[in-house]
Length: 68
Image (tube, one colour):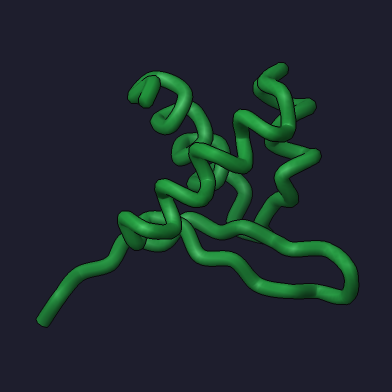
């Protein structure tokens, strides 16, 4: 996968503590929503992003997992 795009998504989420939706990330970075979704799923698997349901929306937040 494209590391640059993943890093752009992470940087954007780091700067928006209130969380963002896939659509907002897509608009901001000018990357197709489906592409953003693929990278976000990877980042969730890597425990760098968490997802929270808020009504119909799913907000994404930067989260750096640190094991004890």
